[in-house]
Structure formats: structure tokens, C-alpha cells
Length: 115
Length: 113
Image (cartoon, rainbow over all chains, first blue to last red; front, top):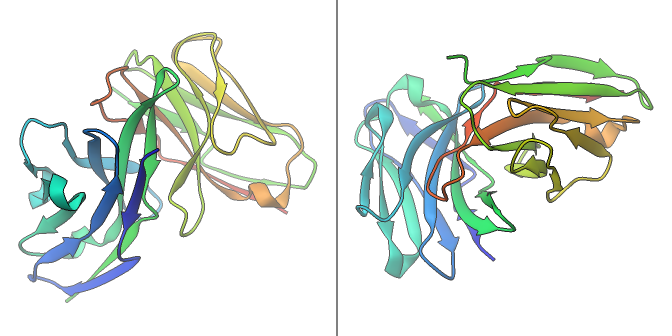
């Protein structure tokens, strides 16, 4: 069975500085991986997804993530944080189980951005 | 397109009351899901459906029932609400491919007192 670990429950950065949100997964085969963002009192929005086409994946709003099979990691980065990036971020693994796509969520990382 | 729409957005129930949450999607997705979100626990799958007329249990199905009479709608029912069911509920839908992402509704914040 697959699992997802987000290594930081909270991350705080200053506006204009880089963002790093860490995610490790366990998988017995090539996974599909996603990052979702949830702004306060909103639903989840897809930031980016990895589906084995390229290890460096670019998403919306300047975010990107790199799939590293040797490290079983899929960390999310952004070169320069903006105040509007303050939100909760979820790393998600998709696995095929019982005829449907089971999404396994990490516990989430809350990103705070300070002026 | 509206995407995934949940109603209601907020609800307060007394212990023992019943209610139904409605999820509607206009993307012709086969798969639909109900999740609950609790602090520090990510999202946990309650029930899911792989097509019209089919439903199945997820990780935390106890105390909930679902129905999918029409492809575009997925209903979540609480027959006798308990305080432990206080949570934020999300509906999602997706195509059938493993690499396809799920689309989420805006959520329903339910409080059981």
C-alpha cells in the first residue's frame, strides 16, 4: 500500500523568498503524484501532477515539483513567495485499487507568508 | 461549466438528526467521491462511486450512506448525526484514468451539537 508523508505541518517564509514544501511517498511501483492547494474556506485546486512524462513538473502560479525516484520524494518549490500563496498544500498519491483511483492524501502543510 | 457543486455550504445539526448532502458535477465524470477533512488528518475517503448505480465503502464509511441514481449526482446521507461527524465534507469527481486529477467542490462545513 502507498502512503504519503508531508515532512512539515507548518512552513513560514517572507514574501519574495523561496518556498520548499517537502513530500515523501512510499510506493511499490511508479506512482501518479499530485499537489493540491486549499485556500481558507475553499475547495482543493490542482497545482500540478506527475505522470512519468518528465521528472520536473511545472504547475500554476509559478510552482514546480521534482520527482526523485531514488529519494521517493516529490517536493514542491517556488522561487519567490507571494502573499497570495498563503494556504494549505496537500501532496497526493494515486493508486489503482478495487476498480477505482484511490487518492492518498498527506496530512497537509500550512504555508504562511509574511511581508 | 460549474464543475463540482455542493449544497449546502454550511449546516448545523442536533445529535440524532438526519440530513443529505448533494454533490453535482457537469463534467461527465464516471468516478465520484465523498471525503471528510479534519485538522491534521488530510482528507479521508468516506464512500465512492465508479459509475451510475454503484457505490462502495471507503476508509471511514460508518454512520454514512450514499446513493448515485444519476451519473451527475452523488448524495451523502447521515441517518443519525453524531458530534464525531462534525467536519468539512468534500465531494470530488474524476475521469477513470489513473493519471487524471480529481476535481473538488467547495466543501460543506457541518457542525453537530
